[in-house]
Every structure is written in C-alpha cells, then in structure tokens.
Length: 201
Figure (spheres, helix red, strand yellow):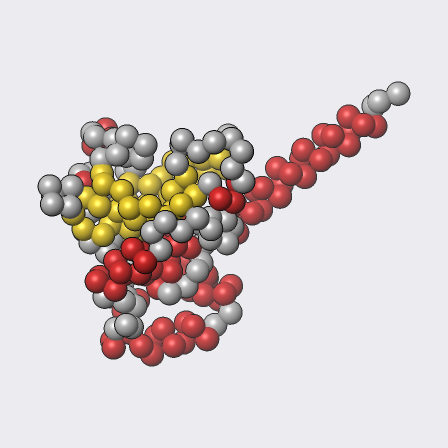
C-alpha cells in the first residue's frame, strides 16, 4: 500500500517516461552513509556494496535490502545474487537468483569485512517524502520474489529489484553507463578481430 503522505508525488513520478524517472531519482542515490557493523543495518534499508566488477573494465555496485534480523540477532537481507557455485553451462542471464541470506556470509560479506574495508557497504539515505511503501510492505515485496531466476544484467538486476521493492519502479540507474561500457568493449573487440582479418594474407 502506498503511504498517504507520498501519493501525489508518486502519481507524478509514475506518469513520467522511464528516462525522466531515472533523472529524478539519480541524485537520490548519491546521499549515503557508511555501514561499519552488521548491527547498523536496519529493516527496510537500501544498501549498496561497492567495488564489484565484471572483468577489469566494468565496475558496478551491488544493491540489496535489509529485512531485519533472525532469531539469533543476525542481519537478514534479500537480493538478486549470482551464486559462485553455478555450473559453467548456465545461461548468463540466469546466473542471478533472488535469495534471502543471513550476514555475515562466506560468499558475500564475511565476518570483519565491514570494519576492515571502511566504506565497503553504504546505506542510501532516501528523503522521507520519497518513501513510497512502509517498511513492512517493502519486506513483503522483497520476500514475494525470493527464488526468482529471471536475472538480466540490464533489465532485471540487483538494483532494479531493490528499486521495485522500495519504489515500485524497475529502474537500474547504473545499467545505462554499464550498457555503454559493454558496447565500447564489444566494439573494441570487433575492431581488433577486423584488423586481424585484414592482415591475413
């Protein structure tokens, strides 16, 4: 259920084209605060892990949601995550799966990693007027997609999952520069192949 205090704002946002929505929300993702302990993560938090990469050239951030704590007081999160144990025959778009995970976790954020790496993880600070759903609704939306395997690097990734849970918009603000980088890398590879073919006698 959309919060009464933000109904008119979100009606306006929903009417806009996706590019306008992206521009409107882009600057919001810039205000952040560092997370130094797992206990700093609160239910409903939009969290970002920095420093991930695809190969050497393509840098991106991993987005995830805190959904509270388990019976032992450990932080629980939900995210679209690529498990490292998947076989080599899996199609690239299907590598990701919406998973519920308890932190620390050996495959994601290990014990002590938050303290030793400084600003490894940050909380996105959204203004109150852009809160669309209650914390309970955000958690329910996230958990409703656990097990989903429709990952797509550009259209249905970790960021668009979090944005849908929080804002009801399947938007990935980092996908546009990522798409540009991938296109440039692809063009460079094609140029190299073409130049190589030109030199064949």
